[in-house]
Length: 212
Image 1 (cartoon, one colour):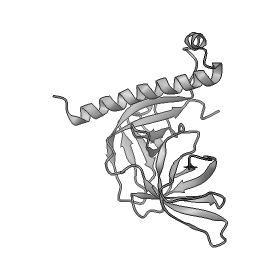
Image 2 (image 1 turned 180 degrees about the vertical axis):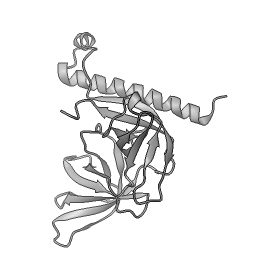
Image 3 (image 1 turned 90 degrees about the vertical axis):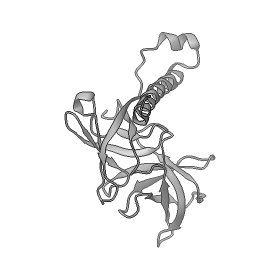
């Protein structure tokens, strides 16, 4: 029998394959349209994102500057600013440093972490925010700079908005919110989609055009 960890690793590897296929087809459709013959003729077209699987070697979740160490390093193609998510597209963090054999991830629950977010309301997804961590609970982040024009609601999903990650990667859902003292913007308490203390296998994301 295979161990659960072996099964999880196979699952993460398979998800990486499926993600690559999906993003490839998305790029094809948007570049050359829906013509099936044209798609077949352009199978070598570059894709924006590359995906690979990695395993967590160690991590912390009870500090101000928590970290996650992955079992892949520079020799495996890892570079700083790669995105890291779960197999089911939940946000974990970004790669902050690499050695030859290992990489360090700055997760959401690190006081130095920051990323852009997008509020999803099924009507207009063009409202953005900044997502950080205040060093308190490992289960919540803070979304700030949310326009007062947003029809904000508890339970609203926040996804990542960054060139380092594809669309549809979930950060969490809004649990509560309030306006600032000048009533010019909202800030929200966000219930994270991932339990950062229980991460085993991850999907690493590279935007191959990020440095351009």
